[in-house]
Image 1 (tube, protein in one colour):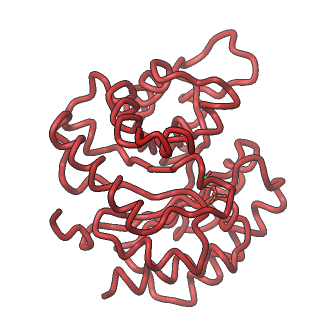
Image 2 (cartoon, helix red, strand yellow; image 1 turned 45 degrees about the horizontal axis):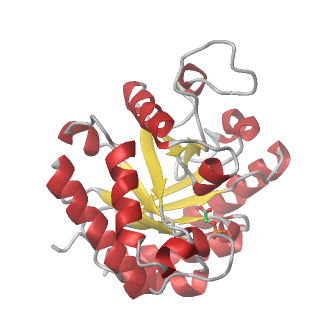
Amino acid sequence: MGNLKEKEYIIAGNWKMFKTVKESVEFINGLHKELSASPENAAVEVLVFPPFTSLYTVKDLSDRIKTGAQNLHFQEGGAFTGEISPLMLEGVVDYVLIGHSERREIFKEVDSDLNKKIKTALNHGFTPVLCIGESLEEREAGKTFAKVENQLDQDLEGLSPQDLEKIVIAYEPIWAIGTGKVATPEQAQEVHAFIRQILKEKFNAPESLRILYGGSVKPDNSYELLSQNDINGVLVGGASLKVENFFAIIQNSYILANG
Ligand code: PGA
């Protein structure tokens, strides 16, 4: 793999179903204060995925923090109780998380719907962050590569190389999410390199496509993960809920981006 480190890192926080509006505002203000104390690093994008209820309130609170939605519906409107349409997110978010394993497993989202969601996100000018990854059983059965390749095949079906330029992939092994069991930097790098190769071979994706790692990322393991050649950032769950932890991860990316 070529040296991709001149490419921007993305440090993203997935808040899941946590934080009231008040707590969200407090977090963004707190993180902004920390970020403002250090010069802006153009090679690092800081991004959070708050719950829908907080998005509108927090979106303009900091020019150093981008926001994204945790999900969207692929239709612009209709009788879909409880869903959020892309039109409602226009002017509110830059990014949309698609196919998080919790959406796939708990809410039974299937690849064909995720493919529609990605196309919808692109049509509305959002950057989709597509999450893929294997379960523990799949890893133990030696099916990791087959699983992520299959997800990429289905989720990205019909997308052009130009579309691929606007997509971010998050590799999140399910066994590492919320478990404290982080993939080793070597395990993560191996799958990231594979994903990059598949995307290039099958979809003509640019070498610079950003691939984030997610799954028990913490301040103390983030530096090593971010140092890997094919890891262009991290998607952080638990450790993104406290300013102190999330900022420590951002600081590691600053060191590497400057290095
Ligand atoms: P975690 O979650 O960092 O708490 O493991 C990651 C995610 O679900 O995106």
